[in-house]
Image (tube, rainbow, N blue to C red; front, side, top):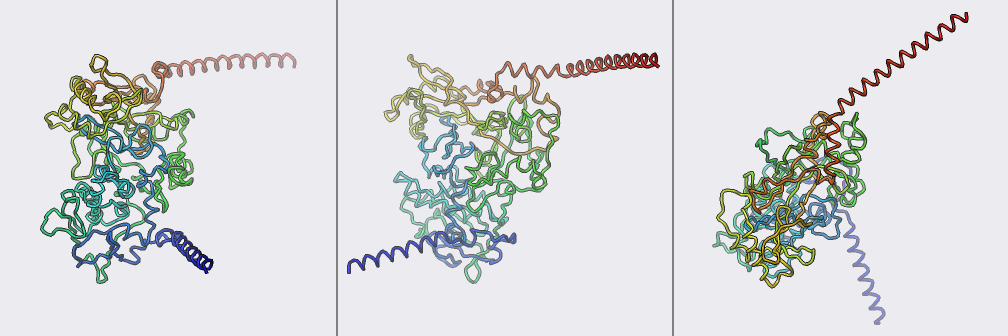
Length: 620
């Protein structure tokens, strides 16, 4: 009897496992293309249901009206979990290969002189948010404005009890499918960013969708707030209002979803503004040559269902998730003429250039000048949001363009940021100090009256000394307190005085840039060799500003030569460049020498011909 019961239970478990496996392997409606290039299914069926976070269908007469969930609304037709493991969402997954170093999130606190590149990926030179005491919830609050949700936004890694409670209040920042695929012109990503600032994470997508509005602030709600049972009398309670005629007679809603993401959807997170002395305006700048030719961002930056976006550089297979990603690089298109790409001949350019330079060196980014410029990026300066600071000196300070040796050994154009932060040092290991400790300890010492300037406040040696001395008394800090800023390492000597020195921790973080791409006639070196090979050429001898809050006026005059980032010897580089001054003379001398030699050879050839003629005449 017992044996039969065991067999029956075993068979039930087997059937259950098989059924679950079958369900997980089953392709959903939107998971696999049948090859048709027609309009996506959202327009063929016209309407879909809005589902809230409690898996209930939303109707226009619900009380209270709730925000819809992308996981629940899009999930029935699309593999939400697989899509949410894509490159835009998976930074917090330690199992994902980091790929080539890219643009970090930059944490700035001007009051404490802090400017650091953050990333969940293992990019050398960046820091993990937790190293500065920044939790996942705080990270989303700081940078969620230009995050497409998912990943860290799911708030699965919260550890502090109070933040777990705040996570219940704000809700999760789910993967925002609409940020890319919603073609509705009413979709408002700036509103999405505003909702993040209000800590309305679960309401952000609904507020931005174009057919609903959200009022209220979750950040003003208590830890016991329940969004399913709001307080009608509280004006700060987050509330949803759907536009009239949003729901049809079956409580379904129309979504204008497109498969091919319009480039304008990329711009909110991937825009740059060059800050230079000329005060360049948007209308005076040219568009990327690919976009001007009619291509869109996703023509090159493609992906499959896994949403592992192809980043466009060689050997990106691991990060791109597919070996086919190597087919979407500069060379793969321009060597074969794909998508109408011109095949370059590069006449007269020595092959060594292609061994030591990337394609982007000559064709991408701003042209180098005697001194570098600064650039404001969407992700670093919140461009496109209501809170964006338009001042040119707004932090963080990002230097561009810097021609530096990349991970693949080739020189290419980069952006650069100088880290600035308070840390402790044990031996040669530098560990950042939690920002809360820094603010509590150094806040009063560094407090100054804020001016109209949005850039650095000026720190002198005496202020640094007081902060380091104060931090030395904090029991939770192991090692000696130090300050990293402007490429320098500041510490207290045995006499208690501030000293500065070089240190690896003070080195800048650089990441390669690839846009905007310029055509051949505007490429670096299109004029002549002297564009790069002269003793005054910015490519080698341009000045890269060393930026930091310590003695700001002095640091403004501190620079490093471009060739230092290329790891080239100064004298050899200068001597080689100087040789190009005499190359026109050498060409004249060589040409004249060849002409003289040719004339001498011709003369002797004529004499030889006359001598042979005489012999032949005498013989006859």
